[in-house]
Length: 443
Image (cartoon, rainbow, N blue to C red):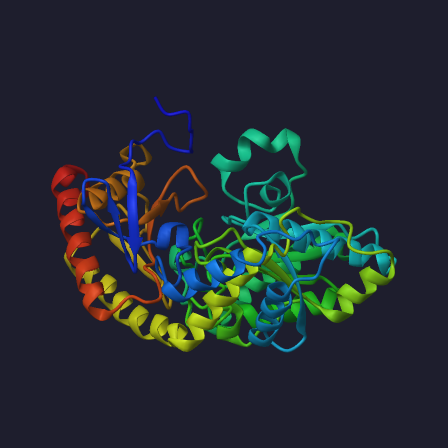
């Protein structure tokens, strides 16, 4: 009997070892990590350079509390992150994961408003659907009903606007009018709440688990930046999934040249070697808060030297091996292969994403984009069929948590075109089985 419990009760084999994009169980079966875990293992498993950096740091120290010591790995990683981020984002606050990064961003924004004499600003507008973390603070800006409904009495739910899902609304995402249409929803919400009460707007430049690699329509990112500036609202980019190079640039926002006021990163930032994340903010904001008594927030493992040594080695490998370039190149190949599946399977309604943050969505009718019956649980069924083929993919409900089915195909940034062939062979067999098992519904 196991004493562990997780989100799922599905029985899984015991992991024996992992290398590159592959993982082996104790029976010797080799799985392709087609989702990088939960879009985490950006540089693949067991990278020798990262392991060597971790061993070297372990010989020196594995822990140094942030109030007692500065550490060389912490300073070096912060400098590296600042260099990779857009100009002005030059102060780095380390955390252990994505939820912590998002909470840190919201709390810094709030403290900055208080310091500036704008204590009336406390509302953080977000989108629906969305996912920003599992803590109560992060859940307050999350738009995913199964995760938030049980805890609503325990938190202050924040205002939501619709995510820019042009493909579901029958709009052309390449038309600037579409981007303006969705951005106008932010301005309308700010005005409805009262601009003097709105602290920040948080969103993912390229969607994560809840929207399945959603890419915004033309003009949306720039318009959102302009609206936030117009009303003095801080712009927070949740780059927990899109940051770290997976989309072909270090940050997702870089694809549009849009610079936020605060960035939250994690997941691929530590690449699965250590729990690691960061909030990145400008000096003008941090200095104002520090001058007023300091940032009233922190975590025990913030800036852990072992974690920072690993994170620095991860970023160095990404640069040395041009993994951002590889993510863009191989991602384009994989995306084209996924789009080609639409000719074979009429129930694939959309393929989207950037770099190696990609997803496809299943529908009952491609014309209306009506979802498959919720009771069918396609999101779970196809994951299990792919797992039987020894391919790991990641699924969520598309329409806010209780309906819709999308699947993230996000292998590590080291993936080759030959390995894309492997992934597609296994995925196609799983889809063939899915189509055969549900022929009556899919006809």
